[in-house]
Image 1 (cartoon, rainbow, N blue to C red):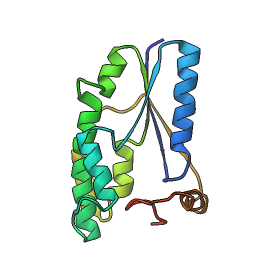
Image 2 (image 1 turned 45 degrees about the vertical axis):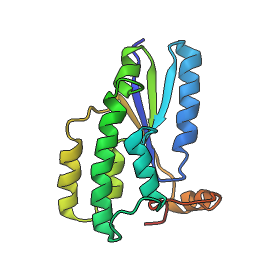
Image 3 (image 1 turned 30 degrees about the vertical axis):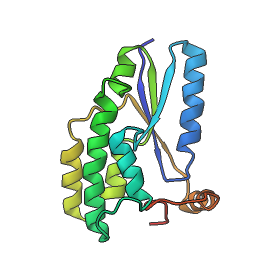
Image 4 (image 1 turned 180 degrees about the horizontal axis):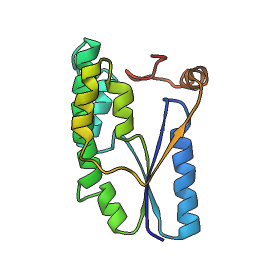
Length: 163
């Protein structure tokens, strides 16, 4: 069986992390090939910068459109590292025969970084050369349920809200 790159998408609090973890575990048991569980932002250096910005520890623009544009560039840089770095990148894991299961990918950039029509073109250009995953699974959960799940968290980041 050929290893696949599988992505889970959905609102914050929709259960993408839980479902990704369950799938990675099942793929390992069923195929014996192993599965790497990953996410965006990644655990890499740019991903850590993104997490700091979303938590308010790294200051970016206070104006929402500028903040989202800055984040779109950072996410594209993180995505490139996430896919292609020689240490633990997606492509390396696939070449080693492992499935890769990720929460979030470039689809989220369209959802989180596009406030105006011109934003769509920027996000498209930043992400147009990244490969499509073999499978994308979207968890369709009502906003109210996601917000209820998020309310149990001790800290919310810049994007974990109803908007």
